Image (cartoon, rainbow over all chains, first blue to last red; front, side):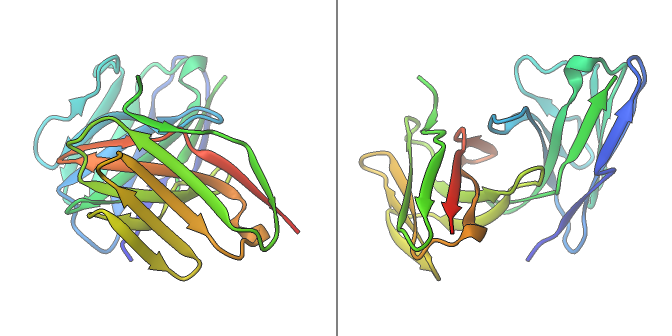
Length: 113
Length: 109
């Protein structure tokens, strides 16, 4: 099956710093990637839809200047959390689509101190 | 009303039991229906993917879709402790995917 990787798997940073999370489709090309945030014991919340070569589409309530998304190639999308604060601590998950199916990465746990 | 409703549980069953997980939805535009399994601190993994109304079976798992009632189910037969996880239903239209809250399942040996 299709494999999606994320890096890093876990990151701890100080408040005010920026953190970059990478999402890669390993064995397929993904024209569309999705970024989700998941708080403990809650479901996945879509943050943005990322299309290769174009600007990401953000869900309502998600600050595009805080969560920078770059989909530079058909196999790589990055999410940068700028000026991170403790309330940004969460589990960030990306997915890549093939047709109507989505395949998820293993997630990145961000802890902002 | 949420677009996708799923009882968060928790649900605890003995090993070998048949598990029934359900979701309802309100958006008739949803065309694709998925069930994901998510272990603690891991990303979701796709279990079942269906398009039309009816049943789809894969090993111990059966996915059922009733578009007329806007109701989907996942059945797990002969449940195992390794099935203990959170199960998320998901449904999508074109470039619009919504998840249920997830049901936390524990299968006790």
